[in-house]
Every structure is written in structure tokens, then in C-alpha cells.
View (cartoon, rainbow, N blue to C red):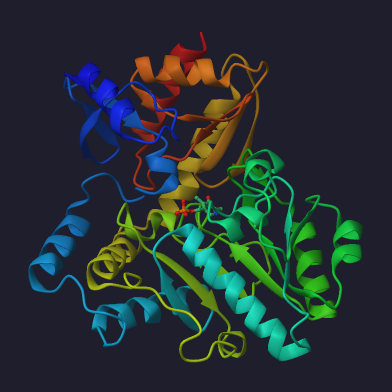
Length: 390
Ligand SMILES: *Cc1c(COP(=O)(O)O)cnc(C)c1O
């Protein structure tokens, strides 16, 4: 049955994804079930999306209730859940205003457009540039691809939109030299997730904040992957001793329902006029109900505390595994570094052991389990990974 599906997929879908040979039909908490009924421990959660677990009952109930009441009206009208979600997010983030988007890339598009509008008002039309970092990832739309510091992903789509450039992460002098009168914003991830789960050093982040203040440019944090509890804080900059002017979130915000958000300080958000930006689906009632349920789950079950405790446990166990040379990352966004470049093979073997992880680099395995994972499930995940490594 499943094999027939692979052939049908190849016949009708554009071949942009190299998929693992498995068809999932159901999920329950940290577990996924394939078409044959085999059980897999999900330590990837769809790339840090399903943070409160598969088929989360609170999210499922909220979504089912909302779908049966009101699915969509345009942003020409008011809906209460969108406002409530914005109130909750701004309070948690320490930022003032929200624009709801549909995913990470569209949240970042909103941030880039906001930065351009802000720059224009501040220093005129020649102020529009966004500087980001090498090894970053900000999305697949043309603008967010232009901001993504991965030449391999960019080259075949040139010419990319102008107004973007990258400097090496950690190199303050290079950044200082790159910032000029054309610069509107500096865009960074606190942990470069797709780049290989590379955490930026705290003192570098502090220096970034200082530099942005001194040169009067916006500091934008792309928290699409590291936000919403993933690092053991609501937002990844919290606990690192600095605050951004603008931030984006998406992946875990709707636990699998598509929603993104761009948050900003009041004065920055004021750069947008009526009509400057819009979306059909962004901030719709169903996805906002899902996100509100996600926030309730994280709060009421103290999942930030659990993420921190399970992170310590997981990092300690991973670093003791054969063939693992070290562990990097923050919270429950971790990478086990391998002594050899065999991550793709280990991922395949792990799948056969009933464990989902991914090869974020040829020599690094990414783990991003649900924030709900228990201590014994962490033990089980590490046992399965150990069998794959042997
Ligand atoms: C996944 C990701 C994006 C893009 O999000 P999409 O929802 O796939 O558009 C942007 N930035 C970061 C840091 C991401 O991890």
C-alpha cells in the first residue's frame, strides 16, 4: 500500500523533497504511527513545530470548536481571538504590536517590509538594506532567500531581490563595516537552526544590540524555529540579556496549524500605514484558537520548565554516545555532533529503530522533541539513537 503511494507521489508532486520512505497516518503525543501500525518516537516534531505533542487534545478541541463556529472572515473585520492572541504574545515577548502571517517566511517578509518602511521614514528611500549572517536560514520566498546566508540555496534563483547582504556570524568588525546609511536592520537567529544548530554567543548578541543602538538600525530576531518555548524560554532571546526591536515566530505557534507572527516595538510598528501590508489568511480564527491553546498548554503544564530539565538530561546522555564528539544548541533544539560524516546514514538507521531525527549537517544530527517529552521518553530516544549509531 505504502509503496504504491511513493510511486503515485513521484507521478504527481513536484520533486522538491527528498523524503524518508515512510507514510504516517496518526500521531499521539511524542509518538507517530505509520500505515502498517509501527510506532516512532518523534524527536523532530516536523522541524520544531508540534511542540505540545501530536493530536494534542486541547488544541484539537479548540480547533474543532472553532471550525464549527467560524472559519474565516477577512481582515476587513474584527475577530476576538486574533486580538486575544496578540495581547498574549505581546505580553510574553515584551513587544507591543503584532502582524499575523501564515508561516515563517511570510512573518519574515513582514519584518523586512516593516524594516524598509521604518528605514525610509527615518533616513529616506535609500535606507532599505537588511544585513543577515552566513549560515542563517530565513525562508524560501525570494526576499527571505536573499536574506538566507546559504549561497548553495541562492545561486540557482539569481537574480535575487536587492537590499540584502550577509556577514560572517561572530565577526563584529565585518558587521560594523557592513552597516552604513543604507542599513535598516540586522536580522539574526539566536541559534542558527538550519545552519547546523549553531548558537550565537551571548557576548556577540550583546555586542550586536549595542551596535544596532549606536548605528540606529533595527535588531530583528528570527525566532521562527527557536521561539515558542523551544529553548526553555517563551522567546529565545529571553535569558540571554538583550531584547530585539522586531521578532518573528511561526513553527510551533500553531502546533502544526499554519500561523506566523511578526512582533515589534510600538515606535517601529508605527512605520506601517493602513494598506502597507496585508494577508488573506493571516490571523484567522481557527489558527488563532490553535495558538491560544498552545500557549495555555505551555503555561499550565510548565512546559518551559520541562524543556529546560529534559534539555539537560538529553544533552548529557547524547554526549556519552559512541561516535558522538559533542552536543550543541539550546533547550530542546540540540545537535549531536558526530566524529564522522555519517549523519544521513544514522538518520536512516534511526528510522528503522523507530526514532525520528534529522541530519542537519553531514556530521550533525538534530533533535527537537516535543516540549512535553518525559524523562523516560528521553531515555528511550537515546537508547534508539545508540542502536542506530552502533
Ligand atoms: C523554518 C524557518 C523559516 C521558514 O519558515 P516557513 O514556515 O517554512 O516559511 C524561517 N526562519 C527560520 C529560522 C526557520 O527555521
